[in-house]
Amino acid sequence: MTLTLAVLASMLILLPGLTFLGFWNLKGARSGAARPELPLGSATTLLLAVGVSLMAHFLGWSCVELARSLFIAISDVLPATGMMWTPIETLLRPEGLLQPVFANPIAAMVQYADGGHLEMHELAMFSMLVVLESFLVAKFVSHDGFDLVFDGADLNGQGWVYHHYLRPTQHGYRPVCHVLTTFQQNNLGIGYIGAIADIRHSEKGELLSLALLNPDRFLFQLKPAVTGKKWQEPGEAPKFDSYGRETIGGIVALDGKSVANLLVRTLDKALLDDIETETENTPDASPAPEDTDTVTVAEP
Image (cartoon, rainbow, N blue to C red; front, side, top):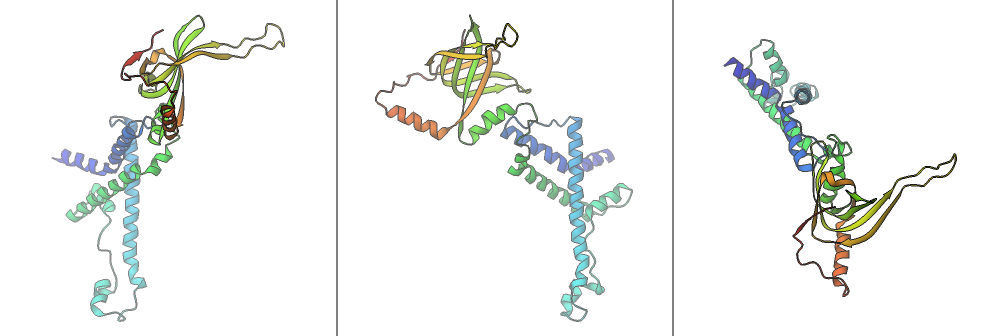
């Protein structure tokens, strides 16, 4: 029974830190890949929970002590004795001095841990204070300003996915991807340009798969830089050429191993919609493909 109470007391004391971890993981799962999930079985996570709990309890103790000090100092700002109506004066200043009507619950718990006796009302006040601290921690972690602190930090090695794909789609932009594949032969390779329909990555930020919506296909040629054969002879700069760009439509699914390089650009969805509308209203516009739900797997 004593062990059970000790475990419950420890959970109650660590409740602000556990609340911080829970809302951190919940917000991370909903916001994107830039914020890592904190496993509860990690030693670092446990130290973080203890640290957040200590900070919350210290701030709670400070606020309670401030309130108690204000109650004590009321007698110094009240009018002199006999200047107020007797019932009110008796209520505000019993026996000439206003004493605090409550004890500091954090200090009471420290005294209890040192071998003192804890009253039921002190335990109830401590529980209410811990719940209030946990609520404030949850509001703090859920606030948008807290996200701005970690907005530029790539904590999980996956910030490129978050900053170039997830966040733009949440703010009215459409990511367009330029992909150079590993399907290369005779110095020529296959490339694609299209809006990202789906992107998958591993826990370490490695690309697993990529799907492009209504992409354009083209051939590309990469020419590496060539140094001069003689001393001070100017060499040739690297060169990139593309040929035969054509729209293939549908969806192109690429495995992560077949992607040699990619570039993501974010374009305003409203601008793209206007271009689409103008294209549809043009008489010479080519008709849209009838079946856009087919999946085309890129092959060399």
